[in-house]
Each structure stands twice: as structure tokens, then as C-alpha cells.
Amino acid sequence: MNQVSNRFSSTRSGNNHISLVDGKNGRLIYRGINTMELAVHYTFEEVCYLIWNSTLPSKEELITFKEKMYAKRRLPKHILNILENLPSEMEFMSILRTCISALGSKNYTWKPTLEQAIEITSVTPTIIAYIYRKKRGMDFIPPSLDKGHVENYIYMLTGEIPREAQVKALNAYLILTMEQGVNASTFAARVITSTESEMVSAVTGAIGAMKGSLHGGAPSKVIEMLNKIGDKENAELWLRCRLECGQKIMGFGHYIYKAPDPRALALREVTRSLLGQNKLLDLAYFVEQTVIRLLKEYKPGRKIYTNVEFYAAAVLRAVDIPEILFTPTYTASRIVGWTANILDQSKSRKLFNPQVLYEEIFPK
Ligand code: ACO
Image 1 (cartoon, rainbow, N blue to C red):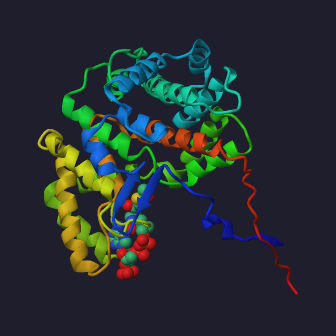
Image 2 (image 1 turned 180 degrees about the vertical axis):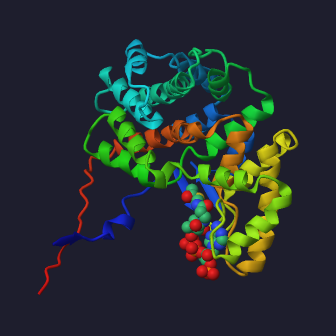
């Protein structure tokens, strides 16, 4: 029998100019700008531009950029054919991965370009909305070419024009989850790009990584917890029982952030305007306060704060995005970070060729 060591799992694999994850001080920075500020004061389109171009757009640049993005929302005919013909029981993320992969039948050759990044990012919400509505037995709503990226996404899912507060909350969520250093899926995208394979292959591979339950599935567990608590009156007893048994509370604590998770703080801020309008969000605010108080009592001195998953779940629910759409929606935002990393990686001619230690373990 032989065994492969896991030493590779935390090897430093290059420099990153796109985002900084500063866990000690609770900061997430995109291209030099704090995401707290971006999430509250900027739009999805502006932050896309920043992540891809390293600078925020001028007014004129933003107009041209939006025109380009919105024009790419329509489903290409062959993608529509694929969507119509894939088996209905196929899993959501597998359909999305297949469709993104099929975008490669167009002229997506090496080297990756910004135009390709724009196209993949713009068409993904349309594919997601199509899959969602088909799974629910509803007719497809074609994209509107004059709505903002976030407004159009909600419109294609629900058929309704969302309220401003909903757009603001989802806009913040999408911005805060666009990019997070070189995590597992981003690393997958970089590895594929390092072989000089085209952008569509790299994004397809990244979706494969995102699809795994350890990466993209966390907010569902928070919803499960909030559903079990059900009402403010039950919160304290339910949470105490869990802590007494030594169990963890979902949506609290983080591997890297040992200060308040900036993404959770920003989401809490933007959802204030939705308070009183959504029962789950109201419950989430109450549960958070209770957990913070109880963690001080049960885990004094540990640096455990609310993490992004806690508010991600509440925000998505507050804007009427059901659980089946959690991971696809996360994917629709993270595509921006993946494509920025793919463009960055394509400048280097270095092939990732990891060394893994071979250890022979034979019984003597
Ligand atoms: N609830 C209760 N106690 C907790 C929690 C929690 N959520 N998180 C940590 N603790 C306690 C631990 O029990 C431990 O207590 P002890 O010192 O008495 O043994 C202490 O705090 C330190 O915990 P660690 O496990 O060392 O913290 P670590 O940083 O390794 O773990 C982790 C981080 C795994 C995320 C953990 O906080 C956790 O399981 N949280 C709940 C699950 C969750 O929300 N996951 C999503 C994370 S965000 C993301 O992945 C994008």
C-alpha cells in the first residue's frame, strides 16, 4: 500500500493582486478598496469593472461597459437547445456546468480575453433563471436588456420588478462573494489556465470545484437552523441545548477571520432596510444577538464572530431566492473572481506542476 501526503494542500502558489483576505484585521480588499465600502456604495457592474480592470470606471466607461454586458445576456441558440434537451432529473449545478462548457463551441480559444469574461458573466444568470423556472414547471422569462445586472436577475427568476431594498441587498451579497483570494475553485481555474487551456474550460473546472458540498453549500445549514428555531421565543433554549452538548452554531466562527467577518458586517448593514418585512431576516437578527451573548458565556475569550454564511442565508431568503438557488447564485458572482484570476494567470507562462510526496508504507 502507498499513501500520498497531503502536504500540497496549503502550499503557497504565487502572488495575487486581485484581493486580500486579511483575517487578523477582518478586512477583505478588492484591488486596494475595502469591500465594506464597495458592497454598500457601488453596483455589481462597477465592481466587476474594478476586479477586471484594477480601477473603478469613469461615468463614460461605465455606460459603455454596461452596454457590452447587457448585450451578452441572451441565451445562444445552441445553449437553449441543450437546456431544452437535458434530462429533467439532472442536478442544477451539473446543468449549469454543462451549459458553460458548451459556450466553448464558439470561438473561445487561447488566450483568455476580457470580452469572454464579460460574456460568461452576463449569460450565466440567464442560464440559471432558465434552469430554475424549468425545474419549477414555469416558462422562461427572457432577459431585459435595460435593467441592471441584479434587477434583471431577480426579474428573470420571479417575473416581477424587485423593490429597491431587495436589489440593494442582493447587490451587496453578489459583490461580497465575487472574490476571496485563491480558494479551492479559483485555484482550480488557475491550474487549468496554466496549461493554456481556454477560459471556458477553466470556468467549467471551477464550477466543478464549487459544486462540492465543502465549498458552495454552507448557507443552507443556517437556513436549516433558523427553521428549526422557528420563533424568537425558542431561540435561547434551542441554542443553549446545542452549546451544552458541545455542538457548534452554524454561521459563526471562521478559519481565517479572527476578527468580525467584514462580509457579515456589510450584509447586516444593507439588510437593515428590509427589517420588519421578512420574518426570517428578523429572526436572524435576533438569533445573532442571542448567539453572541451565549458564546461569551460558553466560549469566553475565543474569537468567534458571525460569518458571511449567516447573513448570506438571511439575505438570499429576504430577496425571495430559494435554497435551490444558493449555490448557483454564489457561482454567478464568483465567476467574476474566477475570470479575473484566469486573465491574471494567463499572463504567466508557468505551468502548475505540483510536487506531491510519495511515501511507501509497506508492512515490515
Ligand atoms: N459555535 C460554537 N462554538 C464554536 C464555534 C461555533 N460556531 N466555532 C468555534 N467554536 C469554538 C470551538 O468549539 C472551540 O472551543 P474550545 O476551545 O472550547 O474547544 C473554539 O471555539 C475554537 O474553535 P476552532 O474549531 O478551533 O475554530 P476554527 O477556527 O478551527 O474553526 C470553523 C472554524 C470550522 C468555521 C468553526 O467556527 C465552525 O465549525 N463554525 C460553524 C460552521 C460554519 O459556520 N461554517 C461556515 C464557515 S464560513 C465559510 O466557510 C465561508
